[in-house]
Length: 510
Image (cartoon, rainbow, N blue to C red; front, side, top):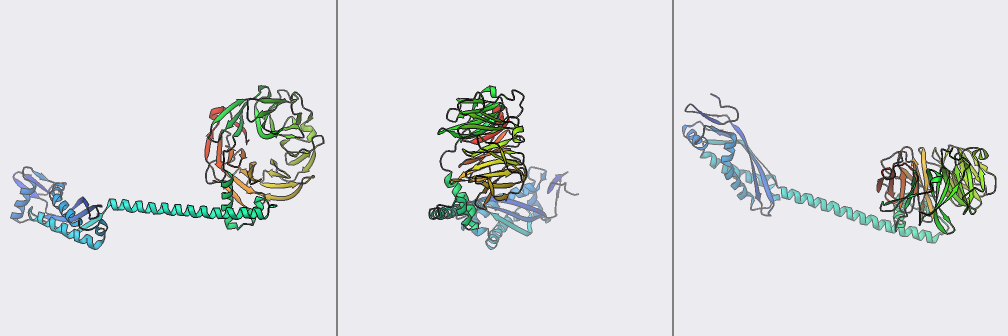
């Protein structure tokens, strides 16, 4: 009669039935402590078989069936456990844990366990059979080794960071020395003369070095509100004159030695004191009344007057201090199309775009076409005496001189959605937002190109200062910020539409 599965012996009808086939048994031993106080554990496995001799069978029954009718493999394991635990603890306490993890010393522990198991087996009617196996491990030693590796890795990182900082400091020293030796060269021209292998590190170091101090606030327009976002992310909202309609653009400017914001709206432009945004002067153009759907997309101060461009109103100028009526108006028919991106190079030169065409005019002169070669113009960036024309197909044209002649052309891969200047060591770098994703920063006088990584594609507007770069998300609901020296990931991502209930039209630092 066979023993039911899960049992090694059964008493039934006054008869004892014992499983005589070999049984593979495992003990999990420990924790025991080695000489170095490390915790040691072991897994001991062998084969046990009940013996057939009458004397052995009698001892088996007395051991495993006294007062009960069944015995399980776990009963067998439990009977040996105390002796094996004691033998394991005695065997490993004389030497460090690391010693018992090696194969030869582990065999000594296995022999001690086998001897202890055989003594128990002799008294309960079973015998031990090969193979006998022992695996040992120390969780505390493993943890110590892991912590040691982590410390070593941390020390290596710190060492690498120190080495990087020392290298960066040396490169910065060399850059400063080059500036003193050749003050006529721009920062980009000096950077271009440095070894290509070091240019990226030097640029990152210079950006970080110049970024000291508090970043200026970022200004944004959404709906009818002007928003101030400080470096800590605090948002303040200011209502501007309602008669001008929804806001479209914001541009920093200096008027009479003070910082102002030129805020374009559907029906005019407001000059706002950056220190007291509640104080706003409205400059209105009533030529379109309430029929206009667009807004003033850009504004600038030239020759003591306020100038702005509007796709339906054209190019409009007001005398500062008199906002009731413009002093000069050039409607779209007068300039040959819808003007955008108005800016100034100096007090005698206003520039704006009209589709693919670059236009220029004096405050009291007629508009003239400067260049019409290429794709639609995305941005006009004023860096006197240079004007940078950024086109949708990635071309950047550099214009200089009274006639705004093209002195150089460069092309960046991808389709450009927005562009802005990033102040850098007395000059600027160019920040480009591409439709394919991310931000790119390129030098005007050097070949270094860096990419600011982020989660969005097709950013709608960008702005830069010496500490930060800001961009508007494709859905115009979020603001994304990067520290200028850290291009691997954004430093902040703010859902501004949840505060304003309107989409973001434009942004600028100032």
